[in-house]
Length: 439
Image 1 (cartoon, rainbow, N blue to C red):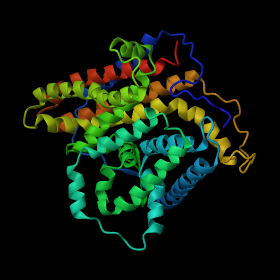
Image 2: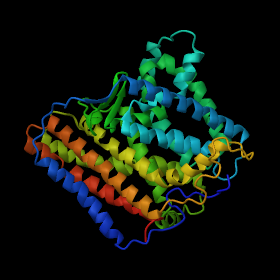
Image 3: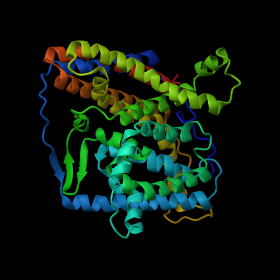
Image 4: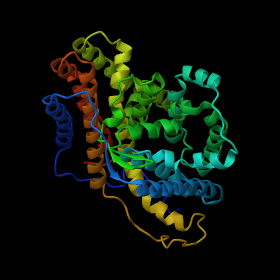
């Protein structure tokens, strides 16, 4: 493709804001805190509200076929364009994988639960690959379930490939990764059965996104369920998913931090200025999980003092862990907003000429030439996503506290520290995202 440079968090220009940056940050943090105060005045009931059906079976059938077709077409085109297309700059294969498959499916799943199960091209491939229904292997399932560390490891590897490896946008490695992943799916998904979704990085990522979706696509139609129904869990979050969530939070934060002058100054100050970037950032990606885990556990300790010690410290942390899911999803969406807005026109043009042979198959070879997203658009979109994600986190945590607390008053008091932490997360994340965008 002609475009050689696409900034991860910037769009090549900056937004000359008429307001000082601190005003945006303070307003965002105050909005998150205010959402807690407004919710605290309402005495919540633990019962779930029923879902409301908004579209029927025909909608489900048509949508399922469209999503399934798009998934298979996207995978085949990614492999073909990666194997035979040009690899200069941002290739079509890299855009289809990161913008289309990863971020696109996260976005759709965050709106409509059940999307990934219908998009999943490997599920379609398995239907043709297997002549008969494969039975799960209980011994293998038990063994893998006991290895909770697989989930954070696979999420780590996914984002390490994107952010640290240096080859995450190379067509060759994307094709190699997809082929390797295909072999894993065909050999392990059937014997692992339901356990697969707790160790597969894309299933984990899209599963997180589906938790915040206000809509659910079922076999009988489309249902509205509300924004936090998917977070209404009475059981503690499984250890593997709990750890994977902190790795997810760390990945987007590290990528924002390393673009700042402060990161370079820090590396120089501790004698790592000349060290290998891949090695330093590989270690940092793991350690950055503690940036979220440690303060979160402090707020859990505070909450437990008000709620009571009838629930263990570790279990209570995993009970409140569900409330961090919308924040993790918001970080992924905001982090990739510039890439999506800048990459979409390139995908449109690439669909008509996937091998750069001068074709114009769909009449889009010259679509949106010269288009660059406004930095103001990117900035305000990031604000909306980050603030919205933290508000959902506050609301979900409040619901968990109501279920666990001995009284409404105790539940409210237990959330003071966590709400303050989420306000701090909001301000810090927006400050990091603003660095290449706002002056």
